[in-house]
Length: 160
Image 1 (cartoon, rainbow, N blue to C red):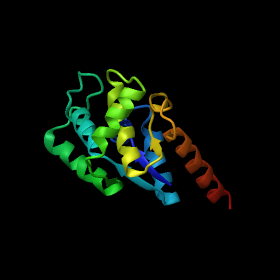
Image 2 (image 1 turned 120 degrees about the horizontal axis):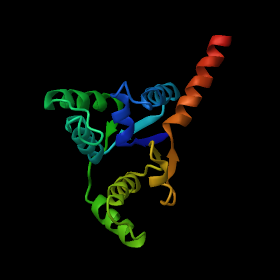
Image 3 (image 1 turned 90 degrees about the vertical axis):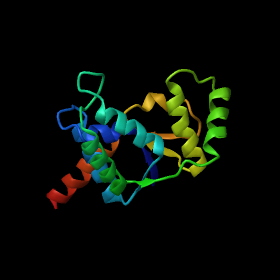
Image 4 (image 1 turned 90 degrees about the horizontal axis):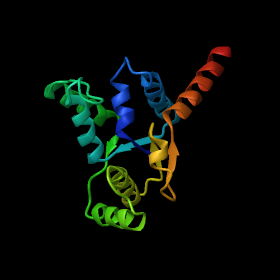
């Protein structure tokens, strides 16, 4: 399966103290075990950098230095293929926000869906399923679901 990784998944992977960390890292193991193809788009990298370098005292910030955040971005590049921003993403985004009457911060989600549509991706892996269920043709997969698959797979392997 080809899937887009949402920013929140990547953030939880590098935040060991977060309650969702184990789901995020286990979901990544399941992607690898299933030989799924993981993709990211530039917007995900931009958002990831912002969260990584935002002060801890600010909402969701990880307080990393620029150097640490850039090292994390390089690591992410090894986990998922970066798809380019193409000319088609912008008009697709405009179409989505117009037709679906998207406003405010939901415009970020619409941009991810626009990139998915342009690149032919149908599945997004995210902790924010409700943000993407409004988009027809987009399958939303949660890290919890993939973690459950991983746990079932490894449990069977240890019982054999």
